[in-house]
Length: 253
Image 1 (tube, helix red, strand yellow):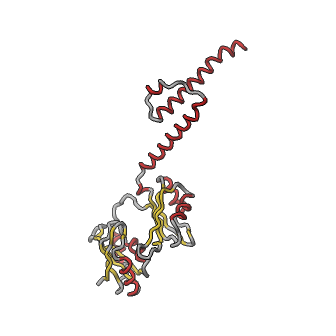
Image 2 (cartoon, one colour):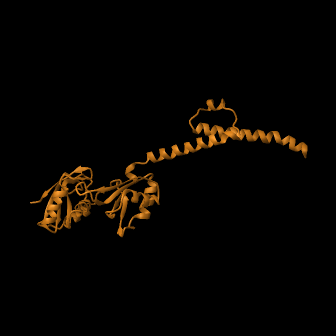
Image 3 (spheres, rainbow, N blue to C red):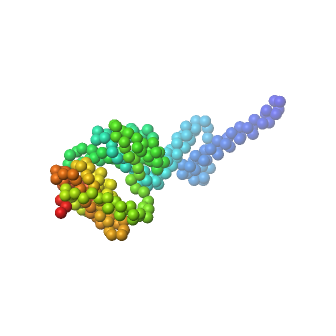
């Protein structure tokens, strides 16, 4: 038995060294070193394990960061609507952070009054986290208000002209109405309604379209229930920024 042990022992220890050198080589190559540089590096000892672990950890972190950078922000940026006015960026980060890694939060405020406009944008670190957040938080409540959570930008689908025509036919006209010009192409009737609802009682809103198409004409109309609401909308929204563009608001004739 002693003879067998003495025969196997050298091979056993040599195999451990070979395995160590193989793991060492993998770590060096993963860290960006060339095989030639590795050959000049001696076989590892137990004292080099912490170094190898740090190299492997750093490589994994870089890989995760590179993966996140490859995912477009539009697919990770979420619209969060109908939030209470009192909700802050920090509170949103805590709420959304329970379901994924948050990159940044942006509660939107009125530049004139300083009040929250009751919606925000939350950018997650990955598309997977963004999808998880939508699944977990959309239609849930924050401060007694049912919130809406969805991706801010999605691939454009073929327009449904029947929906556009239906949207225009359901517009409620009123003598208390404003014209809204210089609209971004992304602004919809729903966006107009939400934006102006912060200023008064909106009866209806519509974005004008090029006849027979889904293409925005760059302007729209918003009708209110009173003349006071019209005056408030003009005072607070004229030259305000909507979807990245400064809009013009005046009384519709």
